[in-house]
Image (cartoon, rainbow, N blue to C red):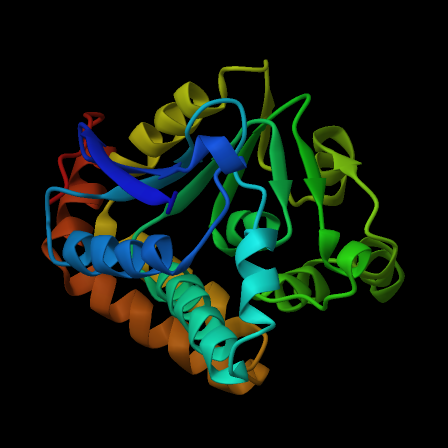
Length: 259
């Protein structure tokens, strides 16, 4: 049975649910395409201010479906290339999406499921969630940007441990490493992610988009380039109507209302 990506809304938050519980929400081309389509639509919808990605049932995602991968071994390499291109298009769309994206993780986040969580701007995870870069356990190398995300966030020795050893790692250790933002009681990851989304939804969306772009570009910019980018974003946001609203609300000691 092919997986699906369910789309619902909670106020100003779009909730995307990985739905393939029979296979622990294993990922596949249908989900990748639906993910890109959902984010494209949400980007142009001013009523949507944030996105939460979660899994149906007790798991976030077991990553790639090994039965499908075994079948693809008998097909032309281009078949798997196209599948990974679909995954990477979704990962890239999450990274460049101008609104916050939050992963709400229960149970297992393995392989590409772990990579997917790492691509999000925030990770909220149950205390008993289990993360694993399982690729080397089945003689495969990473995809979904997992090696990129980990290498930007952690020292080399920790990255090689996670990728080469393929050991399970718990929420507490990832929280200590700075890769998990919130650790919560099992069963409460989605609720906590929605609370975080509500907090973000109350902030100026143009400013959150600027922050995400600046963070994405920081590693590749020189300091001089980045200072120029910060200046451009600051001036643009100051001149934006939300800049006036934010400053006025602060001075008047009231809650701002951003457009």
